[in-house]
Image (cartoon, rainbow, N blue to C red; front, side, top):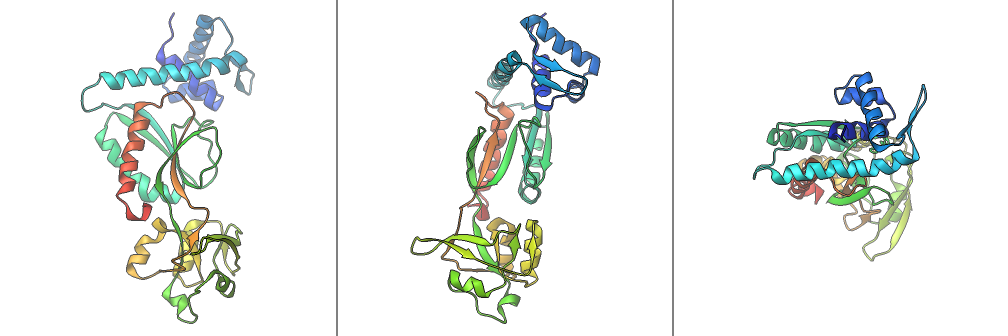
Length: 299
């Protein structure tokens, strides 16, 4: 017996989701075949990699140690295959990507289809959701996240910007003057998202100020904020990429243009910690980074 890449891939997936049968099915193995492959691995290594009960599967101490090596071996195999290929890399395998729903639909989805057309042997699993999603636990290669940098054990690199601005509709501003400073926001109806009523801002003279705002509409959904501000409900904070088309048509106007919404947001490629990312992951990150550079609202 020898260490087969497919068995290593199966073990890594089992470690991620805690289920031998489900992991085996994803890789085309029956539950029996998947169990036998794990047992063969343990025999070769002379140690127990997994603790099994009728309900759960978890890593043993030796399993945790071997998981690091298994990921590194698979990454090195991927790297070697990539380097031995011709000038047009033939990326293959499955690429698992996660992102927020609205950003993913607007930008990532068309980029994914274009990337797949370049590499027809590649398959993609795209998870779009505005709820928290653990890419390590769920076995994903990459998450494209928007926000400010956060301390994390994951590898994170900035690949774009997500500038936020204050906006209102001409309809809303017909009956009242646009605010000229943060203090005047208190006199306006502000659209609240997820009960956040302190809008942190950097003023033109460099001061950081928390403006306390209020309003009669609060929602947890970014698209609902957009619909409300378009309808003339009030003033909103929005990522510029979300409403760029409405700024160009005049349906929305930017206010307090000389103020900077804080914290300043970026777009980040977040990956599980490993020595080397697979070639398909690196290629996709390079691809979307180049695309983001050409989109003004992400600059």
